[in-house]
Length: 304
Image (tube, rainbow, N blue to C red):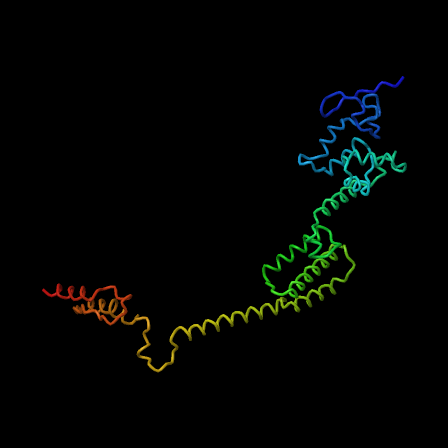
């Protein structure tokens, strides 16, 4: 006669279910008569725990369940293989461990350390973010963080230095990759000579004409060019200082006549008591705001 199947109380959903609805656990905490060597949460509740609302696997929760409730080891290679499996990831992972005689009875401590497991999972997540465009732009072999660094560096260079030829773009990319190599060496993740890399960087900057010295010369040249264009505009569009008929062109805008009519004449009348109300009508119409007839009329009204 077959042994009667045990019933286990799920601490998450507060329901009592048959033990087939619970994953087996290697943890001694659940080896007694209460859980009968099963996890304290049913399969349904564990699945809700390790998957987010958008359906994506929460890698940290996955590790937590393996360590705390199931006491199973983590192997990154097995994990990656199960991610590509069409079956549910945790179930596929447990099944893969059970089918291998070398991993069947192992516990968490026999697998990768928690720090390495989390680091491996982060690498997996970052690798999934690497696009084909990143590989086409910079080549293969970089991590996601390195691709991001290269993209950001190129973006910052493009803000200041505009390029119009492919050769100039290639030089900017080489500068970005050299900066990345220098950063890796300084962070202890490279064995190259920093001084040599700095020399390479200086040579690239000079070749691209974007080192500080050449940049200053270029800026000064642009300023001189702008000044020259301004002088040229003056020569072409305004009368120059020396020309034949100076009297004819000395007051092109009519300011002298305007000042004489509307500033000097009223002040002279006020100070001397003179009654000069005659406006010189030989002035540009747009500057003469007083009508000649009105001026004559004012003159007549002023004589009592």
